[in-house]
Image 1 (spheres, helix red, strand yellow):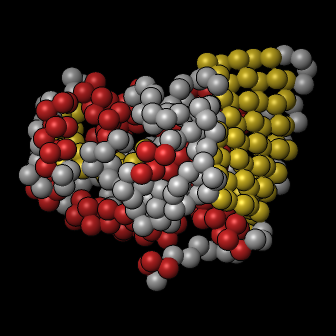
Image 2 (cartoon, one colour):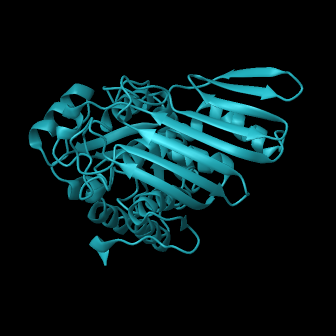
Length: 353
């Protein structure tokens, strides 16, 4: 550490790096100094470094090995993670990585096991858990103020235009691991599990609509049963022009809640209606980066504070494996045309067999 600040190395400088760069700029005065940024594309590397005032690193290996680098911010596509994570763990450098952890649950679990065996913190950027409305809803559920949950409804009506999917590798199994579920809806699905608890079984259909040319799914519909006994439904797509807010609705014994459109609304059975302003955390339309970087700043700040104090990551990679399992189960249910029990149907990964 330099003058009490954590040295951060950044690897992966695509779209996902933009809010992180703004967050790091905000945190430079108090929490971090950037030791280098790296992309395999030298032009992208130089342009990103110049645009944000960060030093460019000559190689990923040099950046990770640099004694000034205390942690790694890993923002590459999921197919490029294993070797970089292995290198970081070998140098005892904590890693904060963008979602998803890997392309499948098997990949995600393998990387979690690597970090746990090394005893090095591995965190995941799932900033929706920090939203004001989500935190308020979490408190209601933790205190059991709503009573038993009966029904959970999640809608993710996003839009991406065709040029988005024309980018090489985007929406492919080989690079991203899938389409709307793992690249866009993972935020809302993770938040749902974080709030309501694990899913026991799913019955689902996924498809590529006529509105996109892409390898994987741009639409998914799933029926769920949670471990608690509650039922649920998910509709997720990137074919809903012009794109709108994801909405999580929970119907419970003492009231119903709706989290979306910038607020949490609680409608109690006794007639009270309570509203809490929510954070905006998603680019729901054609511009995937059209959102404020404040939540990313909070995620990085909390991770930095945790590793400075010798604690584990605030959002551990282990806690994120569940959403990978749910995504794989939805895809498997659609492929097989049957109900999939998450407890008895471990995910398969032909690429890693």
